[in-house]
Length: 94
Length: 327
Image 1 (cartoon, each protein chain N blue to C red):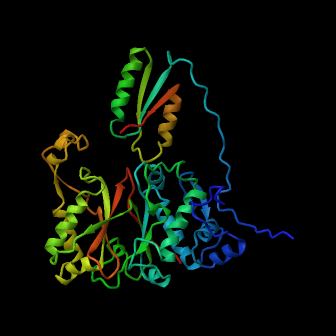
Image 2 (cartoon, rainbow over the protein chains, first blue to last red; image 1 turned 180 degrees about the vertical axis):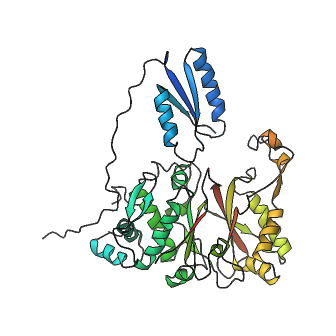
Image 3 (cartoon, chains in turn green, cyan; image 1 turned 45 degrees about the vertical axis):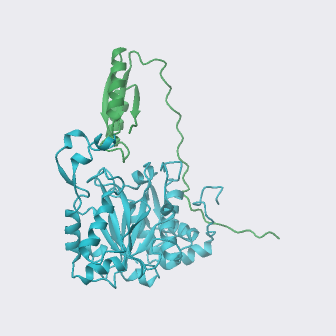
């Protein structure tokens, strides 16, 4: 005789939707690249340098900034980046 | 259960239907009531799910209302539990319980108050962290990116020794009455000891406390991060016996923690960390107004207090958050 013990599930019981990553562009030439500053100290220094390098190569750059690094980017900001850019680079710095 | 990532690394109590049913007897709320949306995945969470995790943590049924209210304080925009989890800093939710419920459920506010050995203190915070992990999906190495962490992230909850102090409690300072059951959540590090065994006057002891508080998180951080000072009975007595009010204590210590920014500008003293040069020539407070929280607790003997350093405060970080406990 087996002694089976049934346990209640402590989890959300949700299976997160899995999405595949967007196809990576082979080149950034002729694309619009968003640079997202997450508002961490010195992230702007890193992004300024990236902007210089990308712009020198003829790539169009748009700059974005999260209100605070401690919270997820607001939905409107994410939508704006997705609708205006072909690729995005997010900077984390300290 | 460990292999399913349902635990915090320590053994848990198996959540059988019978145990969960008994746990639910600790609250007047119905099992299917959705009480919070748990970060980071913002999952709607029922009283029953909280009860399952409370069983696992080792809670008694009478602790359940405190666990539910603890979750209600941290699963808010103002507390920002998502950010508290995601930060690389060593912080987690610290809970202080005030009011009759703390005594009714046998919480410790005395010897070893910030340590182990009391079932309510040890399991309430633990149950909250299990809910964050199991329901919200926020575990170490996932959304929890803390570089070092601290042992209090296993669950950090204590009560204030409010009956033996003439000063208002933390909850009273936050707008509640002494008859209300209140839980306050603060984003904090592990506690750090402040030793002063010689001061016999409030004027001397307060200087020691201020000197230690100035180094909270970093002596070069001002205004942006809060702290909680846990004042022990023997240290508290220095102020009580001299007739100091809590307001006077806070006013005087604030005045002792005005920082000359020239000493903490980046590069000063050969240290690259610090404030930007444009803040030179100023005098800034170590803590924003209201940014020093004060709780009284600890064993009757010992001339020590403790500082629990905070995290980024305000709308861009985490606000201390209080809530009345619904039984």
